[in-house]
Image (cartoon, rainbow, N blue to C red; front, side, top):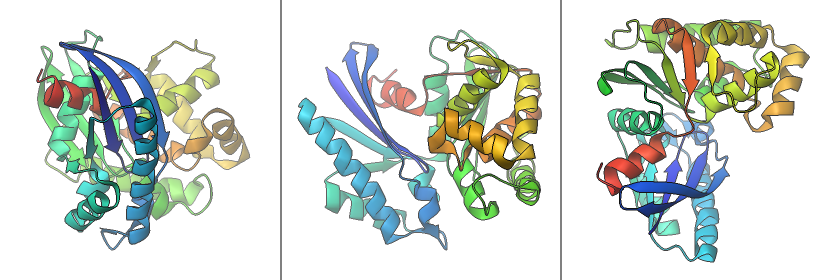
Length: 299
């Protein structure tokens, strides 16, 4: 049986097609649309242009699925539609324009699904978890293979760029403002108590992109999915210098994230420090795989 999932994120929209057999699944196909919806939020509302961007991505995905003969599709949204004041209006407009009914999941659900997906096949029993999106960051602590504490922070790579960066990559003033914003939202914004939980399992496009740059920067193998805290700190030190070398490296390795790479890496660095995690494991699975397991496979 084939199952299609569409995840409407604040930075990117992603379609994944799975082949599901009993309680097992295999990824057959992936497609990404860089909608950048967090950049279309004004006065806490998603603009009509932003709603149209979401619709355009869904129509593109629908064309792909129709060509493949796939009719069964689940669509969910995270902070892209959760952290706005006109959620109902946006969901209704999307349904009318595309025919897709969008489920808006809560921050806790996003952390839970992301944790479930990220942990598949890793065999890690104790540690911490992070998923950095365009407009939110989800974290969790786990012990004995079970999630014991979770939080969702309203700070992400794209909304940091939109608020604090004037050029393509942040300069010294922007770096200071981003640091202050991250500290305010993550370390002082909620009653979530960070404790020593290592390793840190990271998922999502931002963390995978940071690892991709780290592989080149440190000469790591293409298959390497782990970086040390020291390596992350050194890479962020390079990013914080800004200028042409940083811009050229990101453009060469991960051009789609030229605007959000540095803010996203800084969030990852803050979270790793807060958990005192000495090792960061980047998982290829995430919230879509967790959603598939919990909502469709009922695992």
